[in-house]
Structure formats: structure tokens, C-alpha cells
Image (cartoon, rainbow, N blue to C red; front, side, top):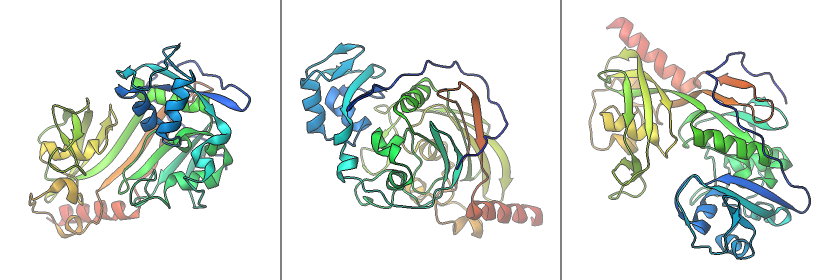
Length: 336
């Protein structure tokens, strides 16, 4: 299925050169280190389709380059931002070997060509297999949707949405597109705009620049912490309702749970987000009190096409549950 992109432009970030794939039984996977740590650990995080043991073997065999130079020690220190080149055995990926199984599912395709797939992810769909969710994920669906995804790290997935978040995601269909998109995310030129219903009313429009990392007291949560990674969220108040409000959030970085953590940090956690509302009590109206997921939707996505260099932008409205929530809150405001 191929459709035309929404005909709206975004501000022009600087385009980057395309990277070529190697042919043959091996392909070179070009990546940009997104974090620091041991080389084998960094690679294991970025390409989980391959076991850490296999990655260590490739490093020792000289199949991994760091900034163009071979590195033979798995424990080699990576600081983040380095160019990594990995010569991958295409016929031996663990996704193909059955670690991640293809599962047919209906995908809401917004745009597709030979290089990219843009989907509207429904709330409730997990993006990547993990403990407790080894099946029925978007990755499993992609493997069934097109065989090209079996050749790619994370089946072409370059960013994620939480299970309870709906909205736009882009997936790469080639290694060069994957590398290009990762570099755009690294350069912070991908535009990601969200709509959220939050408890209370933020005092002013603004920016939250507060590092986000693992919550040391509750490891299943993230938190604002001095030990975290840089995280920047811009937000703007759109509408006010009794007890809550509609805000627009724009991500400059893409940390796990970033909007949820930052809005909670402001004192305005997302409606329906039990994880970050904690023990705080808010005088919410019934529609907000009974909303069963975090009220967060990835409404708009903008990027540079990795081959044509065209500026592309897609916009999708919130799904039925969040649209109903907003309409109910508007009705309450009108009757107040």
C-alpha cells in the first residue's frame, strides 16, 4: 500500500548523505552510538536481534569498526556519538532463526514506499518484545508484513511509543534508511509533536530541561535525576477544562517515558497515568477519572526522507477514546 504524504512542510533541517549497503552474504550495518558503555553492551542494546556472545565474537574477529578503525576488545569504552560499523551475517540473524516470530496483524499504514513505513500505532500495542510481552508486538507484526524487516536491526524500528500511547511511528525498510533515520534522531531534527490531557493546568507555556533516568527506588519507573540523560520537552497549553487541561508537547530528545516524567515533574501528570500520578490526588471530573490509559497521542511526525531528501510531515487525529475524552471535557467546560 502506498499513499501520498500530508502536503505540509516543516522547518528545513540539514539533510545528510545516504549510506550504501554492501552486497553479498554479509552487510555492513552503520550505526551511531546512542549511549556510552562497553562496546559489546552498546551494540547489544542497539541491535538486540543478535546475542551479546555473537557480538563479542564479531568484535574479536575485527568485524566492528569504531569511527572507521577496527576495535578487537568487547570492553572498549564508548562515550556516545561514535560511528559504528558492524559486518553482519544476514543469514544468521536471530530474528530469522526464530527468536522473534512473524505474526500477521493489521497495521494502520499512513505512508509507505521502498524505504519507509509510517504507521499509526494503536494504544495497547507493545512495540518491541520484552519480558512479559514476547508475542503480539509491533516487531512481530512487521516481520509478517514484509520480509525486508527480517534483515534489519529491531525490524527497522528506530524509536518507540509506550504501550499505552497511540500515534505516529516511522520504521526503516532498508539498512541505509535505518542509519539515516538514527542519525536524524541523534541530530534532533525529527519533529515529534504530541497531544496530552494532563491533571490541573500548567502555569505557563515553557520548556522542561531535566535529565531522565531510572528511578532508583522503583526500577520499573523513570524519574528526573541528576544521574539521568539529557531530556528536553517543550510544552504549550491549548485548552483548559475543569480539573485538567489539553497540552501540546514537542520532544527535543526521546528518553523513555519522557513526556510522562516531565509533566509529572511539573506537577501535571497525564490523565490516566497511574505510574506517574503516584499517591497524588487531583479533583478530576468523571471522564478523566475513568480514562483507562495515559492520555497521550503522537499526533505529528516530521522528517527528511532518507533517499529523496524531501521534507515530509504526517498528522493523525487522536483515536476514538481520547477524542471522546476531550469532547466530554469540552462539554463540561461549556456547561460550567
